[in-house]
Length: 138
Image (cartoon, rainbow, N blue to C red):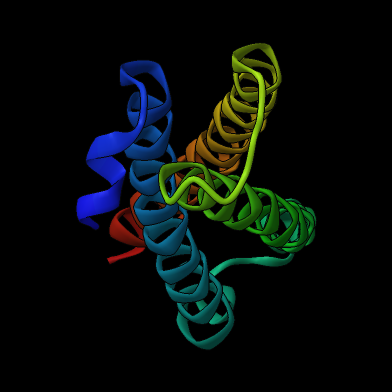
């Protein structure tokens, strides 16, 4: 870790951002697993057929996002490894190449998180409707 302090300021910023994104992806993974479990084990039994038709595609979207997450996770691992090798003096990479890869990663992370938030928003809207319907029945 001490070798990271030898990185140029911009490369160190890239490293810090990539580590932060890794923690976001770890939490993303945990949250998606939890949401899937809640939907499969509890919520689908509460929802009527009309809501199930809306929920099922959301589960599919979550699966697609998980696949995308694994792809982005691999790209992040590569970037972190390159930055560590750069810090140890074992790799030469131009600032332009590093900036380009970092921008590419940032685009993927932002897109993934945006899409995930949209799926959650749709899912939470359906949950709210179902809970309100159940409340009216009681």
